[in-house]
Image (tube, rainbow, N blue to C red; front, side, top):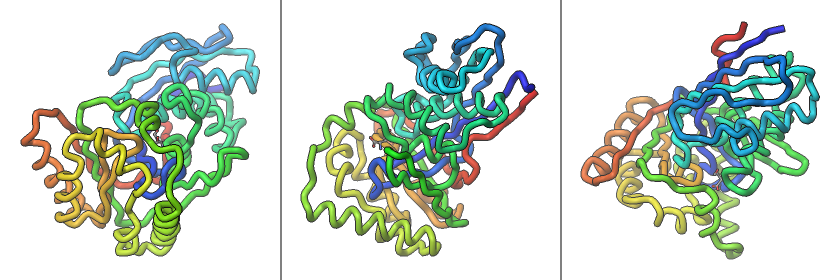
Amino acid sequence: MKKEIRIFSPGTVSNVSCGFDVLGFCLDHIGDEMVVRITEEKGISITKIEGYDLPFETEKNMAGVSAMALIKDFQPDIGFEIEIYKRIKPGSGIGSSAASAAGSVFAINELLGRPYNKIQLTQFAMKGEAIASQSEHADNLAPAIFGGFVLVKSLDPLEILDLPTPEELYAVIIHPQIEIKTSEARAILPKAISMKEAITQWSNLGSLVHALHTQDYELMRRSLQDVVAEPYRSKLIPHFEEVKQATISAGALGHGISGSGPSMFALAKGESSAIALEKAMREVYQNSEIDFETYVSKVNKEGIKVMTIS
Ligand code: HSE
């Protein structure tokens, strides 16, 4: 039996403008690392956290809570200790909590010889993710676990559709270094939307899914619009409209809020276009007093990766 595993648990972009709570994709080299080791003592312990200040108490830590859900089901005669090397800032909008919650269950499943499938891992991970957002949703977890673009068709029963990833698609991210809590970004949304908004949103989501299947970049451009969350949440993000105007003028296929923000994402066809979008984003933020990071990433089709196992 393998005793120790090191994994890379990637960041993700959820919602993707028109798919609030149901659509997401996986980023490539932006993510956390975790080491999980078998222990003789039963249970889950978090033994090391580097990068950001997160709770060591298993029941307060997202990686801990999801891991507990898995072992509660599996009842192994062993335990696991978890080291978290956090690179994705909590509250960034690029799936920081999902990377933790999905990473621990993925790693434990590998050490146990893969008794669970990806749907089951997503279910365990949802228990951890729920601590951050105070609601269960899987649009960051499922892309981290499955890779590529995924659509969360339903939560109960959990049904996840693996969508195709167009070859030339790149994501560009700008992460202003402020924190927006998912629970707060959810609380400001209206409880109901109008029929007109609903029709616009489901027409855009349907056509975006079609565009992914047909690699139709121009249809993607016409579909990446959000009339449900962006009008409310964009107010929480400094310079949102300026950055959006800048990326759209620079040729973005679309620009929106990554998850619940403050990160924003733009999609590009091809790497040179992506680099132009990154430059456009940086030019807006360079003139502000807010620190920021930018990333250019291909869509990661693989999801969480095993780095070493022994
Ligand atoms: N779909 C979620 C939201 C993602 O937008 O609130 C954040 O975790």
